[in-house]
Image (cartoon, rainbow, N blue to C red; front, side, top):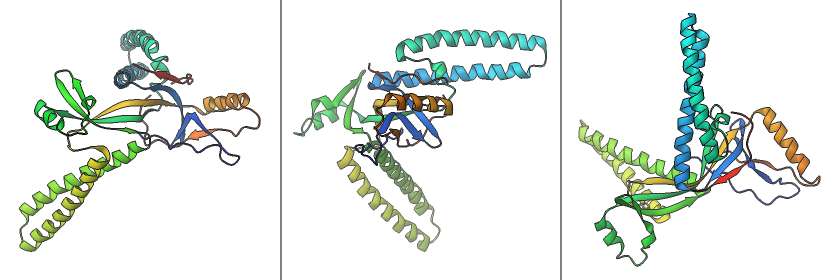
Length: 289
C-alpha cells in the first residue's frame, strides 16, 4: 500500500494551493491518471495493468534479442514473434482503453504508483463466531459481508493519512510477534541459567509491549485477529511525467489561471513508487464499478 498526501491548507498569499493533479515523489513529478472508487474495479485494474506491463516487457525483451541476433534467419523469426506479440498487445490495449479511458501503452514502461486513499480491514468468520458477535448490542449486521460461500467481518475503514499510520503499526506488531517466536526458541535452547534468565526477561518485556500495542490496535482499528484481509476501496493511479511534459503542463495551467492567483504546487510525496510503467499524460478520470 502507498500513503496519501497530507491535506493542503487553505491558500494564502504565502501558501500556494496544492495542484491535486500532480504528486511529487522522490525526484519525479507524477500526474493523476485516474481515480478508482470501487473495490472490484481497483482489483481488476491492478490485475489488468500487471498483465499488460508483463506483456510490454516481453515485447521489449524480444526487441533486444532482435538487435543481438547473429543470423538472418534468427532475426527473421524473432521479428515475426515480436510482430505477433505487438498485435496481440494492441488488441488487448484497445479493450483496456475502453474500460479505463487510456492506453496501457502510455504507462507500462514508465514509473507509476497506486496510492490507496481508502481501505477496509476484514477477517474471515464462521457461523458460530457470527452468532457470538450478534449478542453484542453494538453489532451491525452490515459488517458481515458474503464472499461466495464464506463470510467476512468488516473491522474498520481507514482513509487518507490514517493509512500509513496503520501500516506502520501493523509492521511494529508483526516485528514484535516475530521477536516473541525467536526469543521463545532462544530461551529453550539456552545453555546456562544466566543466559536463560536474560532471554526470559527480554521475552517478558517484548510480550508486555506486544500486548499493549495489540490492545491499541483493537481499540483504534477493531483488529482482534492476525488473519486480516486488506481491501482497497479507493485509490489514485499516478504516472511519472517527463521534464518536457511537466513544463508544458505548467505553462498551460499558468496561462489558464487568473494572473493574481497563487501557482499551485505538487502534492506531498507518496510512500513508494511501483517499478513499471509511457506517453503524454491523459486527463484525470474517475472510475466506478
